[in-house]
Image (cartoon, rainbow, N blue to C red):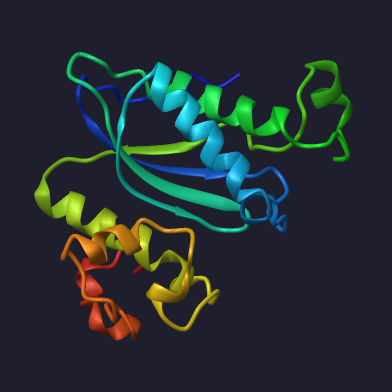
Length: 178
């Protein structure tokens, strides 16, 4: 077993990538209401602020800010994943290892996190979250993807509705995918 260490900053802001086990699955968008419900229920018990969020068919990206003196994002993700899985029918194929551990085989076991360092890092990751559906070829315009906090940011005046109509609008040095 690897000795995996996560950075934990009380009250910190974090960028996450969380993947389904089956990377060709569409479970997240097919069951978006179940995912939203799971997030809402965890936020009630374990508050956090959602700075940005995008849900794609097989993975999601999120930026959260935790309450002061709280750095436990792992248990929040564990609770969200469990709540989501409990609402799904048990039809997935299970490996022997997952079956032996009592796992469902919906989510990848781990998630990727990055501690936001400063305002520039924050802005770059917010942009990355919002451009992701376009980057993956799911839409022709960022505003066309329904499962994104981009729409909230437009209402708040942070982005124009036609932001990133072309990837070239974001300077190459500021894109996280270059």
